Image 1 (cartoon, rainbow, N blue to C red):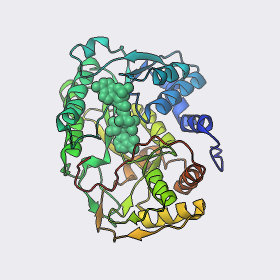
Image 2 (spheres, rainbow, N blue to C red):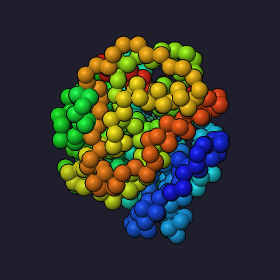
Image 3 (cartoon, rainbow, N blue to C red):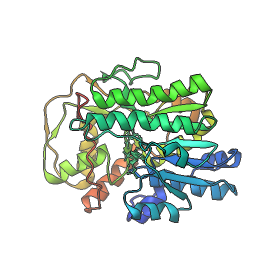
Image 4 (spheres, helix red, strand yellow):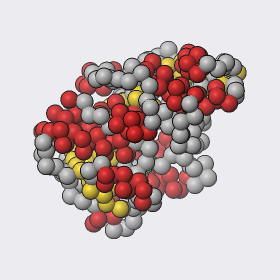
Length: 344
Ligand SMILES: NC(=O)c1ccc[n+]([C@@H]2O[C@H](COP(=O)([O-])OP(=O)(O)OC[C@H]3O[C@@H](n4cnc5c(N)ncnc54)[C@H](OP(=O)(O)O)[C@@H]3O)[C@@H](O)[C@H]2O)c1
């Protein structure tokens, strides 16, 4: 895929984030029915829904793409409709939610709640347990790709290559444990009712408006020293994560396939921040020393199944540096990737 040297504006960014690869288009040639994307109103949803619509159109498919979320922001809903999706406003915590979900043969499940857990842990648990329960009841016979997170693992040694899918799910903190519960509910439905499923453990989607690279670049722009205590992370271009999610619809199974979706490298915060600062023409200062362990996932299973992500991490770093140096719009949603006690 032809990649630009820089991303001019948000229109170019949305186009790039939603550009389907030939492999994604091929998936839409083979789908057996409509697709519902649940929890599409968040940071990744528009680009994933748009990619699905573009792939469907390129494949000449007549499948519908339903975009389902609460859509508190009407402008977001209009964007999804403009992309070619049929929108459904639905709160998955509502008692009658299952009755309002559109029938579909394929489901990408993106509902989640992480931030605010320290203040309202009850909401985090409800969003990550009640909502999956409603979804699994409504879509017994669909192929389901359920977004999960690398937070389901405990921290691991920085030189270990990252947690693998068979590792124990024994993280610290309420959000990570609620995320384990979210997975277990999809697993339960899959084992008990045979619903084919994938548990997609994502570690840090990257794009210029939010993500670990934005957090680092903003500190560099502000002249704030970067604390190295959380010294390592994994990341993947959000467009590649979207493509992986759609391709994984064809790998749903019972029991479910758990799969880490992230970049193939363990990234050192010091190295990444140094490159960002160079590209931004700014100095960078560091404090502290990297702890020997960090939240890291091993991408070998996804690489074997889908190949390596298309977008080199160096290119993503350069795009983000350029965007932040130019004062490009950001979402104002820090990842808090440096949190080590699971309190978000
Ligand atoms: N972005 C990352 O780097 C990252 C990393 C690891 C894992 N993940 C996982 O990937 C998934 C997608 O990521 P994201 O960044 O797009 O997440 P996000 O910004 O939190 O979006 C999730 C969306 O789900 C919708 N939602 C929440 N509660 C709902 C409810 N009760 N009923 C219906 N919809 C509800 C919300 O949109 P409305 O307000 O419109 O309802 C929310 O914006 C999440 O589940 C997350 O756990 C993401």
